[in-house]
Image (tube, rainbow, N blue to C red; front, side, top):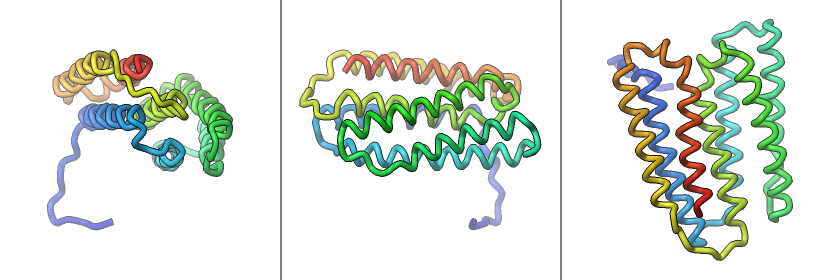
Length: 209
């Protein structure tokens, strides 16, 4: 990794996650439009999603190793769930909708297992926010792929309205992050819930397609 002569002060975690929410909203918006217009190959996008989420799993495992001892019982069991998710994401390219649906089922189930482990371990919340955001985004992308695979539907009725509501929620989180930048540790305890709420708004927009 390259080094610089000047050390930059890292942005507060809340601000970085809020910025990621903005990027994810823009990407989901663009993807939904492209899929609705039939301008992208879903199987290629699904493969890219698998690789990106796999990288997020790896980063999460590194974070866990850096923060917690491997000999903790919950840590060992948790990593087993992450390994299982990695295995599902390593499946060969889904060339047909049937294969896609089978892989989707396995991947979503594996993500659910990880999500439950995060809920059971409050300590993990300290390092889980970026992975939570990545997995929530992946769920929405998979939902889009399932809806649009083989579909010629090009109507976006209601999508823009719901995305506007989602944008308003993200703006709230950004403002909240700025106000609470000096109280990051306190705020982080409930921030995982806010991430789910933001992606919940994205989900409503996608359902309107």
